[in-house]
Image (cartoon, rainbow, N blue to C red; front, side, top):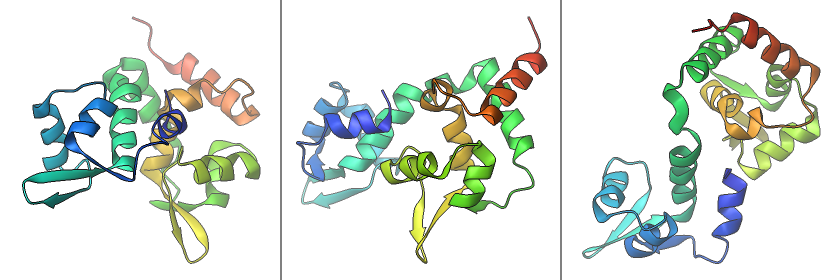
Length: 169
């Protein structure tokens, strides 16, 4: 499930929810896991008396990382990460949407859709999107990006190169 699907699933919830509601949204995770996520600063929260309230957007990010990035230690994903880090090494640490188009090989409308829906984490600054290079790498490693059916020519070339350079066991 990607970020958009999580966001749609939680549309009826308010922007800030209690820990009990958060635990329910996360599939009845235990209290310990919930509070570890809060105290490790993975989730923005407000403390009111003895109660914590958590941002719905941070819950979506938490679930996305838990569900989609858990395979990060897979040898092929590690190979992909190294490949894309080498490929993007000449780009600055923060890129704009035009540079992201160049990096990913997709058109303007696709890039803007991914930025506006939060599939690629970005910041709006001086009337332009700013994207950390690390966020671009996380996006190309994501199941969403890897499962795109109509891949760009550049995307197809990279997958071919990745397959050729991955050491067989």
